Amino acid sequence: MRRKRVLPLAALLLCTPALAGTAPAAASPKAPQAGPLRILLTNDDGYDAPGIRIMFKRLTAAGHDVTIVAPLTNQSGAGTKMMNATTVTVKHPESQVWAVDGTPGDSVAFGLSEVFADQAPDLVVSGTNFGPNVAVLATHSGTVGGAVAALEQGIPAIAVSTGGLSVPVFEPTLNAMRPTSDFTVKLIDRLKAHARSGRLLPEGVGLNVNHPVVGADGAGKARGSTITTQDPQPVLKPDFTDSGDGTWKVNVTLVESPAARRGDVEALSAGNVSITPIAPNWNTGPADFASTAVLVAGLRP
Image (cartoon, rainbow, N blue to C red):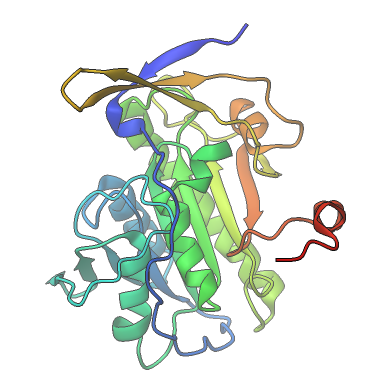
């Protein structure tokens, strides 16, 4: 039997991902050296959110050269959306911080075009996000959208989120952001070790990382890490009630379905970090492509 939990309206992540504009071409990243990386750090919760600040401190403490280029305001659920506006407001409140009045994709586009104009960053990290980005949540996530914007420009990218499939509780989730950031540093170290002065990740491939909240206070370490696929289950179910005045009341429930084997939901539910390879396109696998080709073969306008 499926269980339902009522979520706050802010959890409605049903924005259709769209690329309304084209990001400026970024300078090609140089092969990362053995030393610290130049990292563009973004998110969808806003440039001053706890998650991005914790990640900034941890990456900086690890010796990396980190610059925040992130949305001015909360852009959760923005997906891959990018504006097609004639102007954008950008604030520069701190030497290593840029706040863009737009989506995560807009922030990354501005960062690659202007902040890193002379030399592209070695890596874009998006997060850590408050709450998980697994299953369908990942498809509509602004955190993942920021990583996708980087991948489209040929920059290696990692999206990072903290939380399980339940209504996020602030204090435990906040505490879990610290082990999340620690794990991200270890992941980057592993990628650097395998890169050997080459690309940190295969071209066109990024990572969507989800770290669980472990323990009542959230400060515990995950059991391990697992390479996963994105679970196809919808997770969120919206319900609309006509108010009779042209507006509709929206309620969203969290629908828990059996987790797909080797999927991100299964890993996260078991207390493991989920690492899902992602690509900046919506191509299907070869089998689905072939079966669809049969369906439309010979069709003429």
